[in-house]
Image 1 (cartoon, one colour):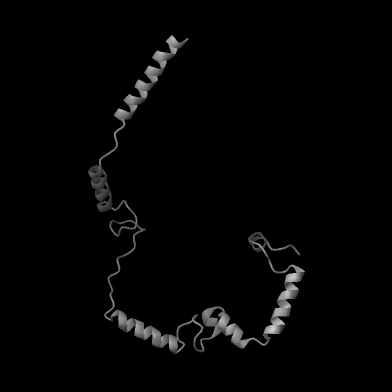
Image 2: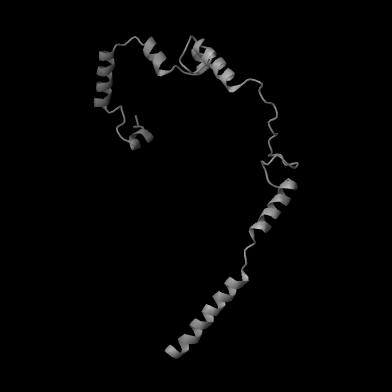
Length: 141
């Protein structure tokens, strides 16, 4: 039985070795030239070339202001309360979509002891989730 298994194994090894020798991968230079040609033809989306609809126009408008000037203007606007969502100034709640925790605390009518009691009662009743699974699937009512 060993005599018939030897030539079979040798044939299988020769088959796989021949297949590996015939399967050649393209060189790096070949891949680079193919990619450059596809890019020029507009076949690669998002490169800004060709008539492809997925390409975004290049940004050409540049600001004349220096980085320091932009930072100074942004800081002044933030201090004046003109930037919504920062919790600074008198920006209306509609502009931000919601109040920041700092703004909620400043306009709250409950004191700390009342808030602690309400939280303890809610925790005892099981209304506050304790694990990630409970947060993912709220209890059925």
